[in-house]
Length: 540
Image (cartoon, rainbow, N blue to C red; front, side, top):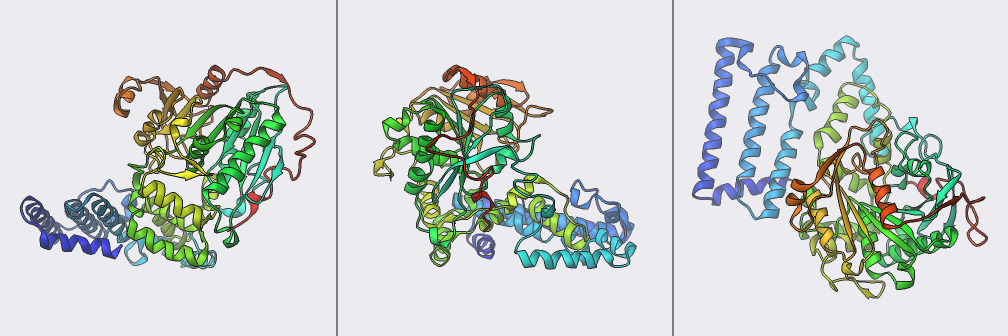
């Protein structure tokens, strides 16, 4: 980060013309505003500092004593830093990195983050006789021991006890995956099963958090037959596992077993996030006899075109990747905690400093929150898998180019995907921008349906239960133009997109409903451990 901030001053020394004039004006405004603040304070006291809209300074304590001027000084300084960074006129990637890290640096120096400059923390310490500081110190020691900041009460949750509780059984296991079949919840079930391909960077049970949020349980309640992959959490001994392994031993095997157990050649397969990207690659190279076992493909917040990968682009360029590769050589895996930390930096106030202030300065314990528990329950990635993903797809953007990649011995061409495809994106997704996701509709050859939901990467997609939802979604826009044209011509509907998707499945993969199976698995694939299985319990 320090190198990126140094580029600001380097660029300032080399820039001439309009950019330099803008910098000069920014500095003059900053100096003028600071002078007015200090002069006003000297003459009028507390009235000199303007009101703030920043929630970090919303408490009454920030309006007393020296704190109004301290807060306003910070706001003026942070704005000047960000404005100057934004006007550095560097090449696109360098400019994005500089602007991003300037904001991170500005957020890091907020007076609310430190005990000596946080009146709320000081006031609470006085009221509790210092107990809040002692509690905060204990919270800090506990987090240092486990290596990350607590964002939820982790003792309140246990996978298989109050998370991932939908009944089912592991019916297949190899070195890489467990395949779980869930028990039907209706007397009759749809004969075309749904097979879920979750991302391998997170645990699959985001699809089955609890009864009120579980997508898997909802599908079962609607008479669907549901299977899901549970990826193993790889250790260093699995560092050489590649995309070929994840496709052949993961997705291909899951399709074979699901088809054999369900006796169906019309599987509705669904992938989310990098699970959707892996599914894209798998379908592009899938043998014809295996593809014949599928009816439709659904992609949630998934990229084929990586030309605009969203905010995470600031972490992905050749110098950063080469530096990280040195760590991969030693550790053999990309630790899930590294990826979680990077995602947290995208919203540093909400995901990091909010908990630092609450946990350590205020001495509070975080409240139970199942989504944050899942988010902290990270999974590693094999070094070989990770490097291929970042270098060949994120940086080189080869997945969308016919023949640019070869997987499982077959040149990758996404136009080989001739199944009906349902693409779902979220308008608040900072990891997979919806407009980039929209480009996938032109990179496959089968009929496509694009749907845009309100919400974020998780909250708009897999956490979108129709009961009491506040979400909305757009459908039916014109797909001949760009994403903006689609959006302008699309219809907005209140509610969750889940029922719309199930209607789409019935339209594009008509399947009868019949008596539910008497038992899970079959003679070849007999039930093993009960859901959620054993792989999901493996830690990092």
